[in-house]
Amino acid sequence: MNEETQTPPKARYVMIGGFLGAGKTTTISKLAQMLHERGLKVGLITNDQGSELVDTAMLRSKGFATEEISGGCFCCRFNSLVDAAGKLTETDRPDVFIAEPVGSCTDLVATVSYPLRRMYGADYTIAPLSVLIDPVRAARVLGLSEGGRFSEKVRYIYRKQLEEADIIVINKIDSVTDDNVNTLSMKLMEEFPKATLFEVSAREEIGLESWFAHLWDHEQSAHDAMPVDYETYADGEALLGWLNATVQLRSESDFNANRFLKALTTVLQESLTGAEAEIAHLKMTLSPDGGLNDIAVINLVRNDFVPELSQKLEDQIQSGQLIINLRAEGDPDLLRNCLEESLSKARKEHPGVETHLDHCEHFRPGKPEPTHRLETMND
Image (cartoon, rainbow, N blue to C red):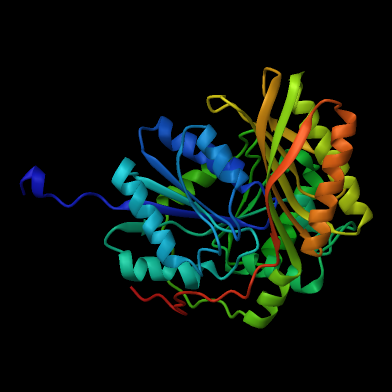
């Protein structure tokens, strides 16, 4: 066959799910970098119920081609998912697409993987579904340890994510003891025996190679989709408050942006804990005005967790844009009140720094209504 008329190779579609705060974005960044170093073009697709995503800003700051799907999860925005892949194909022609679904989403095999394979199988090969977990949060959900927990219907979503996983990835193993990892692994193998299990630390790049190799060498297998009670699923999502905001920072003199970010996160953590709102994930980025992909990133994944600055700004700044994504079990109005109170406190700790809340959307996710749902995938 003439080279010009040969069918181009299929792109690889990889979906990495997991509950809020599991470390999906950091992990996806590591996978994308590894593939890039092997000469493959990578396109990333982020997803959220709202707009103005920290994940998108962070991935783009690392130079990755990234499309954002907002206003609903992949299952409810299936056509937008396909369109996003098409846009990336037009501009970059990726060899691999890596998709990060909303952290409160489940039933991804029946509503995303199977329809994609059925309708677009000529364009993509579908990797097994990976679900990442934070070991501390997982131990609490599975009853292995005490600490802040979500309500029963939110835990329903968490467990359903694990039930449908082809691969369960215990992330952040550097943050707990070996005994804790072993106990959690045994519990997962007992309750979710069909999943292949990996233990990794994306941040420290421990255990990633074997998991990534498995993702590359295996495809999504055909089997019956898991049963899902969509009423309970919807109730669980509705218990989670969602807040996305952008804040403009400005000062007459230079100030330490990293210190301001840490102070704001700490007072917001205290405010939410005092209001008995269980934090699922709080993440912020701070981009200086006029900066070229310079960005500071901070994460908080539990009420009793220490905020982590995963990326820092080297120089002081005079102005910049702050993007805030907060997900917690609590009333959305409460989340906004806590944010406004915390901005006021942070200003007092940093005299001269002015804050202006440019945009704030706070809501509860609506009932999931998948575009497609295939209960089985027959080859």
